[in-house]
Amino acid sequence: MTETTKTHVILLSCGSFNPITKGHIHMFEKAREYLHKTGRFIVIGGIISPVHDSYGKPGLVPSRHRLTMCQLAVQSSDWIRVDPWECYQDTWQTTCSVLEHHRDLMKRVTGCILSNVNTPSTTPVIGQPQNTTSPIYQNSNTANKPTAIKLWGKMSESLGKICCVRPHVERFTFVDENANLGTAMRYEEIELRILLLCGSDLLESFCIPGLWNESDMEVIVGDFGIVVVPRDGVDTERIMNHSSVLRKHKDNIVVVKDDLNHPMSVVSSTKSRLALQHGDGHVVDYLSQPVIDYILQSQLYINASG
Image (cartoon, rainbow, N blue to C red):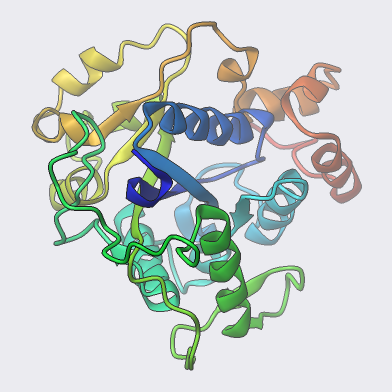
């Protein structure tokens, strides 16, 4: 498949990021690498969406700190950005509503074909490439066809035209849904998918009775699709067989396979907090230095429990 016939993907990761670790960034990198290797996808961007303060998780530090730490963690990345929308809402938002927000926003900003909710995709997440379908591009002139880099750059530019700075965290921009996009460049010819990026722990939580709204699960897995980067030794096949929704939409779940166990796969926010509380020097293996510096400066987690 050529670049013009591949599906363009934005990876969206929701979570506490309390704090964001090297493992979180590694998850993005491994997912992008694996999707590219399939030959059917181009990952054009990644979005980190920290959870709202009202989520109620013990030891969750205020979102202004978590947003800043996330921004510090991705400051050298040219494709992952931090989005504060979820934190700025009046209350906690479901994962499903966050996905739908970004789907609607990207459709407005880019004019792309978003093949997630209620729109059939020409490229399934799993399965054989659909080479029998007609190309997305109808114009044979390739000179001006938008590339992945051009698309993500134009999206960032367009978002910049409609954002306003909110108080409390000046470094972040907030997209105004009521703003007028004017004559922003459109990319109708590119098929764009937003996929939820997660670890195997989130996948396993789908199997816990009553934890997830079943209609939300149908939308998340069936309409959007998920990319799972499992921890070492986790049997994702067994997990998927324990949920009727996961079994039903098994072809819409990408499990990132890694030939070699990577040390980042066992890094977690919990381990990082414990290392900080006990003055464990291994914290440098879990967190980037700018994040560590900010934590020490702000005195976060040092006396926290959990």
